[in-house]
Amino acid sequence: MDLKRLCCDVILLLVNVLIIGAGRRGQRLARHLIEENKSVTFLDRDQTKCTATEAKLDCMAVCGLGTDIEALEQAGVRSCDAVIALTDSDEINLVSCGIVKSNFPNVKTTIASTRSISYISDEEGSSHPILGISHIVNPDFEASERIVDIVESGLYNDTIAFPDTEFLLFTIQVGANSPFIDKTLIECRKSIPGNYVITGILRSGEALIPSGRTIIKRNDTLAIIIDNDETFTLLNKVGDTFKPKRPKKMVLVGATGITRFLLKKLSPDIRKGVILTERDKEICEEFSRLFPDITVLNVKITDETIWEDEDFDKADVLVSLTDDDELNIISASYAKTIGVSKSIALLKTNTNYMQFARNLGIDAPISTTVTVVDSIVKQLRGKQVSTMHTLFDGDLEVYEYVIPNDFKYIGKALRKVDMKGRMLIAGVKRKKGDSFIPGGNYEFQAGDSLLLITSHADGYFFEGFIK
Image 1 (cartoon, one colour):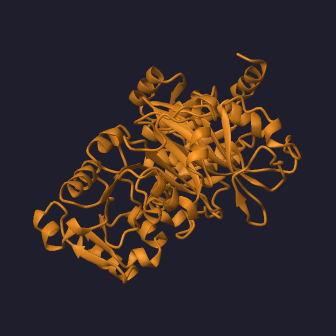
Image 2: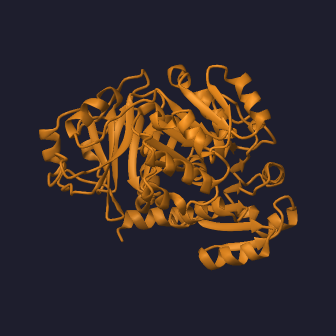
């Protein structure tokens, strides 16, 4: 281990995080933080959960309520840098963070998860100021953001749009006829010109940050950042069966909270082609009032006749958004078997279904657990990180980082900063709005937004770079 990595590890060991709620979201977040050598403690009222969590993760778990000051003290809140409340109760999450903020000023960051939309802006997802809490995260809003990126791009896979830039990140599998096969990245740049960067490769389950000499193999999954205007041009050159298409006819299954967020964010030209199915008549009437430009059907998606009566087989995409993971998987998978071009399934309770859903032909399984953890990690990275997403089941991390005035590399050329193959700068956005893919002569400037890609295993290098 080199000295720089050792120093970064020591810094990270000093970071203490208290997670209130030892459920699926808390455990995924803890696993992410523990892999970065952060110290994690759980506080949960269920002793069985506490015992199971300690057995699975390298952490301590205290049995008690997040609203109980004595329990918070026992869980070591006085030495914590961050407290994150992820129980199934909005009220417990909010009150717990409020108590911490009022009684333990040493805690720099408090984050509460809430399902109610009353605590956030319906349009932008920003938190209403409440109890001094640093940040409020809403699972439905976070998942809707990912679905909007996928649908609006027409790519129907891991797709990320970066606000106020011309960049789009998407993944594509290298097929048998791909011109990428058996070429290095340098050779790809020569034979397939364009304003793009191959930022990551998933190969046999392992995520890689490639160098110019990395050779692309068949069945690799590539993560590519590209100027949005050039996306379709590049994909036409790549060929295979990858044909982007923004939907003209779109079926949504389930009128839930995430459906509300999604419909508000979809562009009007896509929304006018939406058919929403919902089994509850009163909810149908509510959505008809809120969104008069869509078609709302009061039906059960499990009624096979509705698929034929409404010509669902001619839909460009079906998105299943009910609160039932199994129903979402069945609906999205069945849609593909009858001829629907693309399908998306929401997973609210079981992240393990992600690969299962892909194996059933579902194009984009979306986990609220994953999107919530991404949002929280972004907050923990600091105010200079404006967006953060993960790819390849969390193995690859993508950040948008705004350079502060005291950044240690200001004025230095990119080619003179040794990334040691652990991080890649794939895009730059200037304060005045210009976006470009940087070359070796790019010089870091205060106010620039950098698109940074690193593997989760090298997260220590990212933190060392921005400090």
